[in-house]
Amino acid sequence: MNTAKRTLTLAALTALAAGACSTTSHPPPAAETKGALEQTVLGTGQSFAVLAGETVTNTGPTTVYGNLGIVRQIGGGEGLVLTGFPPGIVAGGSVYAGDPVALQAQSDITTAYTTLAGEAPTMDLTGQDLGGMRLTAGVYHFSSSAQLTGALTLDAQGNPDAVFVFQMGSTLTTASNSSVLVVNSGQDCNVFWQVGSSATLGTTTAFKGSVIALTSITLNTGATVSGRALARNGAVTMDTNDVSILNCASAAGAGGEAGAEAGVDSSQGADTGSGSSSGGSSEAGLDSTAADSSGGEAGVDAGAADAGAADTGAADTGEAGQILCCGGALCGTSCSNLSGDVANCGSCGNACAPDQFCAGGACLPCSPVCGGACVDLTADDANCGSCGHACLAGEACTSGACAPCATVCGGACVDLGSDPANCGSCGQACPASAVCTSGACVTCPMLCGGACVDLGGDPFNCGSCGTSCAPGESCKSGSCVCQ
Image (cartoon, rainbow, N blue to C red; front, side):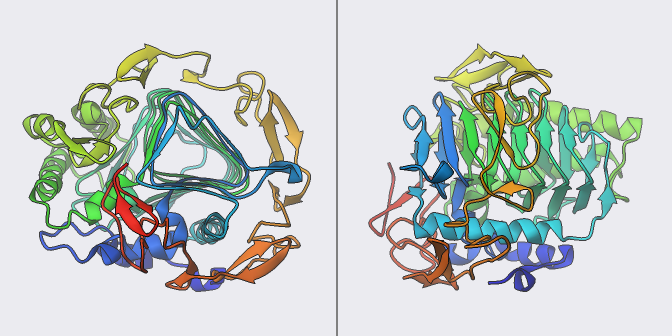
């Protein structure tokens, strides 16, 4: 599928979202509830919680809920680089390394990146910190870098189909203990972050939405992502994190389980209450008046215990936290890994302090720190070798030094032999039905909805096209299993 065919306006995204995140008491089949929105924007990339163009590196007990993929090896060397698994685990998904599934997903997120970058902005926020803002559905643009310090509240105003798109010309950086709160019936799966170079999430950041970065993504100690970390051309670096697509899947596929439906209804009711207390702060999409800022902070305080994931009542959250789900415990409407979730550390609602991360179900201090956030100076493109030393586009941080890439297309490192967006030469993109092999586009052996899939390991096409596994389950040999 070429880029032109997938280019969408915000209105079209919002219309598609109506089918993507339905919370009615009689949801459509799982194959449909996974979402027209995500399928249209992300293609086969929707099944990946983590996808890297070059390497995936992990330290500590990280949990990835969903598929994990690596597209190619660095510099043509032998083998694909995946380190730190174990102690990291992949739950409810599979690992795809340099195979047609990973390659197709990378092609699809490249198209998604272009689509999101082409959306007409609702508001230009260049030079402003997202912390303390309360935004309604729209497209928010930063001509260069974007910073989040504190809490950003995304207010769906009672519309579960509300779509939030953030465009960054270069980097996205969050300070330690920052958070993104999706309130008033909003859905995590309807939040998209298009990052022009690299994204760095600070220590214990509780983030929402799908991050699609041109180069790399670094998740510092204890950061959590309810959504995806998708790095087109570079590395994904993790340290004791939770990255999960379960909120999107569970919100859409509550599928007749009364407990799950009750959790969704409870979160909507609490969110609506939060909206009424904050006043009418929605007219221009952004209102930074003192009164509304104060209201936003109150919303953060109310949702801190559950990281704003569902804003459920205290009693319901406590009870739901005792229910086990595949790979974790049910906290509100989310399946959480209590051993590594900074917002639910050891038990539902037990949030770690700003200078701590969650490991083994206990809140522990983190180090080193740059700008209030834990960083890895050996691999962080925004803090390479020392705090604040950022690598340029076309460079990657390796062993604490910024090194140029062997091949650069559009300011990003690429491998012309396997990059489906630059197959054989810069700008030569393979169609959705093909993968790039040795610099040539080759037709995939199996297609679902016009995209390459692996029926043996794809949790959204398990055994047959459109057969989705339940949240937390993985697809093994064409069957959904809980591991």
